[in-house]
Length: 102
Image (tube, rainbow, N blue to C red; front, side, top):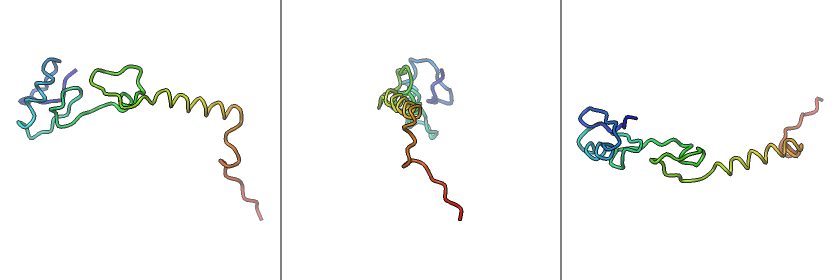
């Protein structure tokens, strides 16, 4: 996969050049460089939100997980489904009533 850190107008794709591409490019080019695992020397980083929040089944090498929200979301959805099936939700406090005509 090509790395979006440009070096002399060429997109470098080999893994060994990722760190070098970001470092070499920083300060030598007026075009901002955006990295996807291309090193901290790039001007910005792209990261998939689902990976960062722990919603993906695997974590790519270039991702730092800042949360593990998958289990909490699964538990919330299961609780909601359980309450709906048991007719415990929505309760009277969650619904809008009909106004009487008159």
